[in-house]
Image (cartoon, rainbow, N blue to C red; front, side):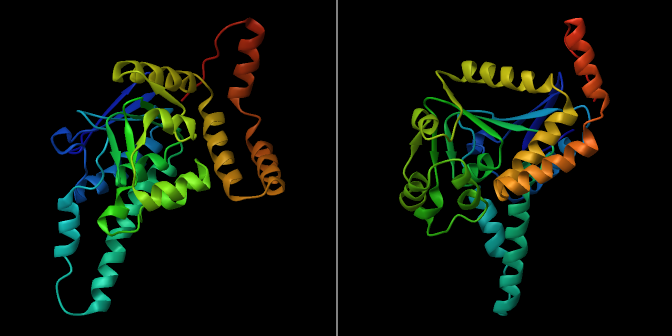
Length: 270
């Protein structure tokens, strides 16, 4: 798979997605956001991939939206009809939202390994990931408030599921920088590493553990966890009952049991 704004490498069932615009601090232009959607749609349906890790090339993870993307949107609203301008804006924003949602909707677990700056739309991006890891020197910032905008690509909807409401409000209202160690303290990140090399080794180790599990079980677990976030415990129990009634008699279950009896590592088909 070849892309303009991303490098994608698949090795040992793990897809490594590198944001690849280091000269622009990995900020994404309009085409880059459309490409993000394509990347995750393709990886979601690729049976050779069991887990995905997002990283950033260069000094920063993602500085958000490139100013050229905003220019693209602004310049496309020609004419005098206000209704048509607003329809066009709505379509463009939907495309951007869909790009972030493609991470959330991906059937495979998505891990983010953050270093340097993760700002604005970069926070939207990580908010859609299943797990977030960072370097201690990394920083996060909901920058939209300083730009006269209400964050509109998922941060305000997804981040409150990860961090306490009071902290969420403070970050959204002030736009202050959140450091890596504090990000772990409030529950945004799972772990803060001392440096980038240590971070990547740690995250790749977690990804390898996930990749060794039954892909059917991992996909099912992600679906059930997502359902649990939106529904009551009672509804969640009904959901998992029906899920397992349909999925439990898999080859993977038989392989796991056989491997346990034989004291060996199970081998699951893609």
